[in-house]
Image (cartoon, rainbow, N blue to C red; front, side):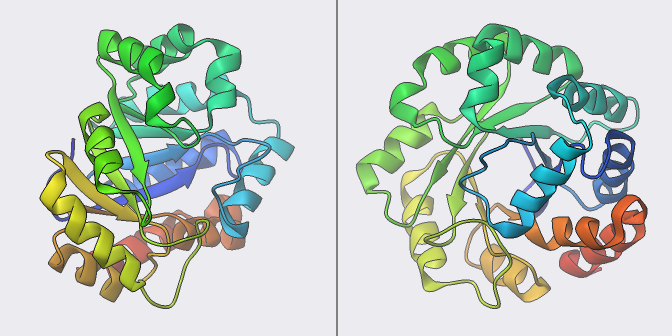
Length: 248
């Protein structure tokens, strides 16, 4: 789904507007092996303050679910970089799994990560995703046991997303030991590629994780913070940050 040693930027759709999100996607595209596009949700429980605020900004400014698909359709006119939609299950359930994934496929979405959908309850989603040809991404945490990690890997057709720490998203000063312990276990168990996220904000974080065997590194809050600070005009700051993280 992405090349080894990739950076995977995360951006919240509609923050602060749909037009700005398209510009931001094009700005980060040069440095991205894949891009995660978050769908704003009123109760983003897995996210820390920075990304929660981005969800609230988008919803306050009138974001609608169809805006996310419209953004992807426009992005597809310019780039083939894989897009993974990151969402909670409620919007998928309310829309209907078949209809949601059908719209995603039509828009040009490549993969789906439903944050609060455990793999043990995901069979219908997996069946529909397979029919639509959409890759599946599941989360594994530092306390995920080996047998569960195998189950997650079997259900995954995109990549396994390794959560680096106990807690929510948000930039940290250091990557905790839990990230490297989980990465070491996952590299022994998983047949799919693995990407590490949560807490990554510096070039040294990216280097440490890639050198430890991660196929990809997800960067979210460090970028969303720039959008919160610079608003509609954040694309140059996003390019600058991705260039720094890429070591270019």
